[in-house]
Image 1: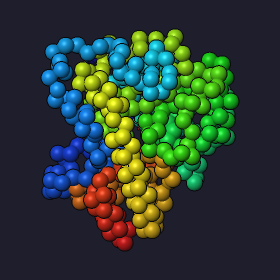
Image 2: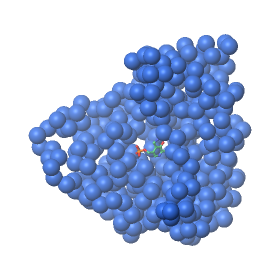
Image 3: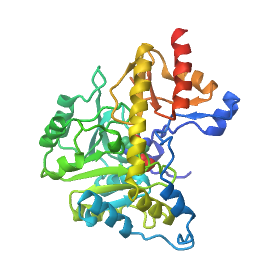
Image 4: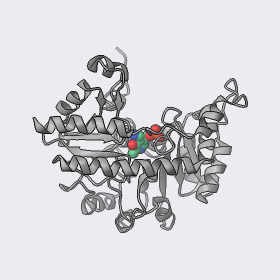
Length: 364
Ligand code: PMP
């Protein structure tokens, strides 16, 4: 007889990656290729590992709820006022915080499909009504449709660019076109979780939004290029400090733990490690993409550390076949997109295993 919050009880499940223990038991292999969660196969900077082992880390103390030192370091790197930055337990938490800060039951939200699950799930948890713009047939953003939905005046627009799960990024002109469609009262959230993997043809969304007049939140994370997924640190850069205060009020107080704050500061202090890793992963992305296209798979152009691939049949069947070979990928489940797999660019040996397995599958 419990009365649940109906918005929460009705949420669609978050499609998280397959558990490694399950993958080991299904494949009978110990060496699982984990290509489902867009983690960094290079690991993280040795400076991060050093700070985690340092006696100056005090796990018995509460962490700074304001993340002042990390916000100062980010403010300096990005040339933004630290008072406009909110740090989260992963950028996931900030998607939830923005939703809590902005949305009341019945409020409207615009996003895309296929999309990062939480861009829909968190607004739904607040009772919002979510409109999703489909991608084009050639695996791109449908700019005209997006412009129309944005101009209808939703409370919040959630877009990732580079786009999870598809891969492309909005170019400068396209981003400016969407910004121009924003009406007063709409918050534009640009999730740049994969920002560091994009090439120089892609704009810095933060820079473009700062040059505009609209209210915005740019989301970035230490989970991908910096390799800190397990520590959970993401951040929001808000168009002004008043917005940042409301977003911060919507997070939990001691959200980012002592290890995570110290690790993120250490990671920022070793950008050279991140840049070298990103260069390697971009090279692998080009190599793997070209080989898979050679096998006849259609792949979206990617500015990320993953590829979105058309299996020309149910992707769950292909994912199961890969799992039996000890390779975890993500089969897309959103309606209309059941033929797609999202595959993280991993270490070269894991990528080669994937290529070998997909070549056998393609021949069948
Ligand atoms: N946004 C996007 C677009 C993502 O792909 C992810 C991770 N898959 C996140 C946010 C959340 O990342 P984290 O919470 O690890 O920062």
